[in-house]
Amino acid sequence: MKYEATIGLETHVMQKTNSKMFCSCKYEYGAEPNTHVCPTCLGYPGALPVMNEMAIELCCKAGMLLGCEINPYSKWDRKNYFYPDMAKNYQITQADEPLCIGGQVEVEVEGEMKTFTLERIHQEENAAKNTHVAGASLVDYNRAGTALMEIVSNPCMSSAEDALAYMAYVKQIMQYGGISNCDQEKGQMRSDVNISVRPIGQKELGEKVEIKNMNSFAFIKDAIEYEIDRQTTLLESGGSVVQETRGYDPDRGETFTQRTKENAHDYRYFPEPDLMPVQVPEEQLKQWRSELPELPAQRQVRYVEQLGLPEYDAGVLTADMATSDWFEQAMQHTKNAKAVSNFIMGEMMRLLSEQNVEISESKLTPENLAEIIELIDAKIISTGAGKQVFEMIFNEGGEPKIIVEEKGMAQVSDDSALEGWADEAIASNPQPVEEYKAGNPASINFLMGQVMKASRGKANPGAVMQMLKQKLDA
Amino acid sequence: MSKTHEGMDVGYVAKLACIDLTEEETTLFQGQLNQVLHYVEQLDELDVSNVESTAHAIPVFNVFRKDVVGTSLNHADVMANAPSSVNGEVRVPKIIDQ
Image (cartoon, rainbow over all chains, first blue to last red; front, side, top):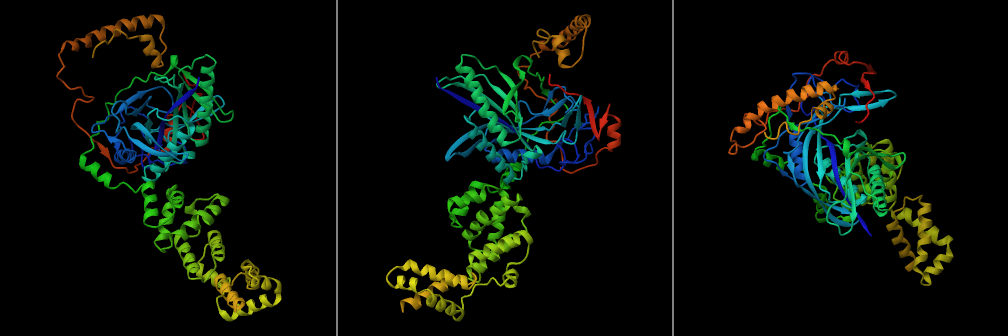
């Protein structure tokens, strides 16, 4: 019997707000522990939460970008549990009336376009950060109460590749939309994965297992693959899958039981009496819709149709927003889109990955690149020299024109200089000259190489070729 | 507001609330809570079929604040309320998932 997996994701995304969801404490990653806390986020008696307007805006915009309907009426609920990461003993979240409903995204998975649907996006508050040490747990409440969205997909995926492509897409959209930085190392994007396996052809879904709280794409991929394999093996050997919550141990590359259905949490949700519901006015929604940014797919089309770039280039350039923005800045100073694209995809990406830095940290500015391209197009320097200038500025900073001048990198197109080198090459290499004249045009390349060598790379190759042909064909 | 006390299990609720009850207390509170629930159940006699359900009694919406950072508590004052602390973090008995 053949089996198939069904996968759904609950993706937590921390929004880019200045202050927390329900109080005015600052959100700052890496601050001294327990320095951004107040009576509200510490759950002191009598402290009252007040909604952060910006968080609601970002959540609605996230919904718009992911094709959701904005719920005309949404409300808040308490999710009750005892765990020191929430000092109130409950988390404020949205149970039955979330801000965003439905939604769907088109994602390319290994060359094939797939549609994944969303169930909802709800707004909630983040929990504190726990660190476990011998015999005790340490709690830092700086993160407690920060704005957190949960993007819930339908069980519509069937492989680790689907899940990763979906998550990468959501991350890209959140970054483009200015909703979240989605820095996974800072815990700004984490996913719970629901997986079940059933015999192909069976209508009902298999028993579901939830793997909690993973922040790395690599772990998610490994955990899904491990879990599909585990469940399939269980079913094949006549066993059955138990509905449970599992954790993922990256060191062993395995998932392990955390909580079974029998002792599943009972959160006793009830409406949050301290917060009034949200009804975003139609006018406001219209305003937010008009502020939505151009998405990568739209940028790709524009790069191809208006700038004449190959689709491949457009895809690479728009994959990451910072790179795409950098490209656009360079395009404000030059018209040669293909040259900018070649430099970004070639020299830039090589240097970034070699030195493990972000494009925003490059000493070379978009204007610098435009100037280098201008020098190449004007045949003042060769493409090779342009790459050298690029690398020098990337490492040390500087102005292309000044560097070209100081290092004497300008090409020589001057006929009198070229003529001397060409005559010398022809005089001291009779054999290739003979071959060329005997009808072997490739032999001219050897002579060309000699001239380039004599000029120490500064001769303009086009002009050299012309000069040699002129002399040999005469 | 129906089926209130029928399925109510004081032992279970106490466990959810992390309260240890003796058997005597459980029996005592079960009886007392049943009385309270019976009392509240009188509301069931009202016909509310034409009343729309709501999470709040007053029609107030969108109580927002601007996303502006305000002052947080002084760190030393915060830690004065912690039962124990290490390096500025609140120290609690090791958390084991229940």
